[in-house]
Amino acid sequence: MVAKKEIPDIITFVEDKEWLNISVDSFILYLLKGFYRGSESNENLELTEREIELYKNNKEGFLGRYKDKHFVCSIIALYEAMRTLEYKYN
Image (cartoon, rainbow, N blue to C red; front, side, top):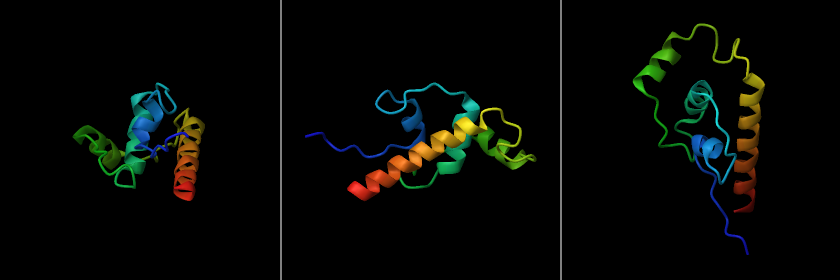
């Protein structure tokens, strides 16, 4: 029998070898932290002072001209699917 794992915070989900194990640039991590902080499994995510200033000064929208926006959306979709499955089967 396989032990059930709880879905980790979004940053661990992306970077940890037990999950996606992918290396992404700091901007993607910044976006994900800002989007998920405070939500279930992400209560301990905190933005740095620099990240907070970036959010305050953002005039074009977070993904406006960002080249990897489809990649970010794919990460979010997979994370949400995993969270839904965890909720459904636990």
